[in-house]
Image (cartoon, rainbow, N blue to C red; front, side):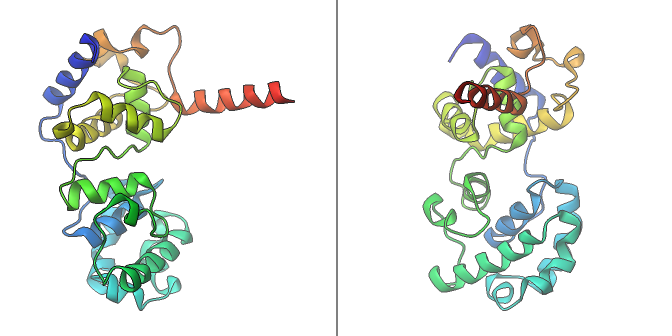
Length: 228
């Protein structure tokens, strides 16, 4: 770990000492469902719809007996109907393969419909207490801008952060970067002028704004043009 990276981690810890999940959940099943709904949707919106959903469908057994058409009216403000389909199908798989209990390994969780590494890592970290670094859009952007990672994919970013950050800080560091991404290091207009991490930040000393998602697209276009 470089001195700049250590300073950034120390700075994030000082900025957000109480950082924690902003989604509301009380058990692994609620964590799983809420995180599926949170894809391309705000946590605030998810928190508005889940109380009624969990009241009427409190566990995998109840959800597995529903149809996606039953669930979609509850969650339609969170986006695609496919989320309702995935929640129902994941619940059925939990009943059929895992005895009605949300599994507690990455390999098993990612077998569930609609569950990728990020969602699985959220469940592991915040329902089972297993250290993990879920890499969402904020963590991907912030870690690569700050210089904690230098990766073109979410998977590469996760592996680099796991290698860099002490294991006991993985879950908390995930929240530090989410908080910083939502409050300071915005996607299109990062508030660099008021960022206390600016002295150590890779992006602050670059000749143009670093937007990791855009860089991925630009490099993909460049590869296509070379192949053509």
